Amino acid sequence: MSNDDITHEAGFRDKLVASKQAWARAGRLLTGQEADPATTRLPPGQRLVETWPVLDLGIQPDVPREQWRLTVGGLVERPVTWDFAALLAQPQVEDVSDIHCVTSWSRFDNRWQGVATRHLAAAVGVKPAAAHVILHGYDGYVTNLRLADFVEDDCLLAHSHDGTPISREHGGPVRAIIPRYYLWKSAKWLKAIEFVAADHPGFWETRGYHNVADPWLEQRYS
Image 1: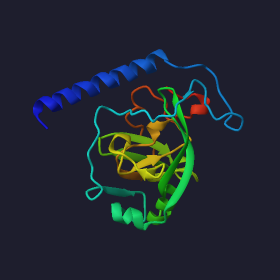
Image 2: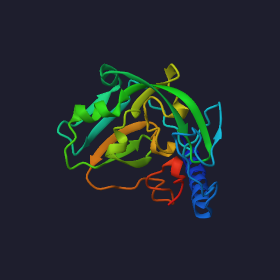
Image 3: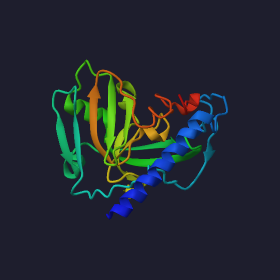
């Protein structure tokens, strides 16, 4: 990549981030409503799409499967670094869930394949002092979750979507899937996972976006 490419990429990223921060300041897309997921699948202010829109920070890391590594540490008994073969050696699960992006689109019935986050937590032996999880992407992105939310039944480290490997543009080779919350909590290009005692708000959470991000409560912004 040339210096001109790097400058252009950084400029694009800065403009995108500034635009999204302006959304937060203005409360863009907010309806002021809440909804019960037991009675409706579509959270407040969302529209249903059949495609899968691509959203990122202007950076799409090219991480071949053979070079991908996931480092898991922090408050754990058995820190690990998995390559892709080690990920596939873990028990594999399949789960179908809906996803909801803070930019107002939702996509139903996504079929994911990968490793359950609950299995990962058991494999590394999360210590009692851990209460939060920090996810890191190869693009430098960081987001945070409560430990109890990270290990829910439908959460996984996904390598496939609807029967095919997750593409680079959608966060492949491996991304987190946390269906309960807006999609910015489902970090793409997953590189590292930290189990920690104290919460550490991530990239968007420190730029005007909600720390929890529950779409049913319309927690778009802080």
